[in-house]
Length: 163
Image (cartoon, rainbow, N blue to C red):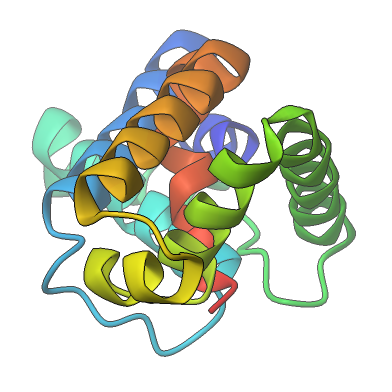
């Protein structure tokens, strides 16, 4: 996402900020947004749109149309090597981090975030209380936050797309 944004705005710091805006916005509307494509495609398209909006608002329409290559910067689709590489890398890192979690915490987290079960359903399946499920989810999120830091939102979005 940062690479794509840098193609448009030609400033690494600004590109990072715009990519972060996309993630933050998606996190805020996660309960109502429906992604009809792959998560990667959605994020890249959103990043592209955010960059175009930024360029339009900051430079006006005249300045925007005169930018060299900005209007024709590449948009990565499902077949783009960089997008595929980033998705595989994130998937590998997530799997490694999940394997490091305590067994019960990992199972509870996977049932909740990947399989989509409610806390009550998980509690019934595993023979534990809903409060214990909440405890394990908090533990898993704390573990993921420690491992992924500022990229936790992206990791959680990726996990939710695995359903």
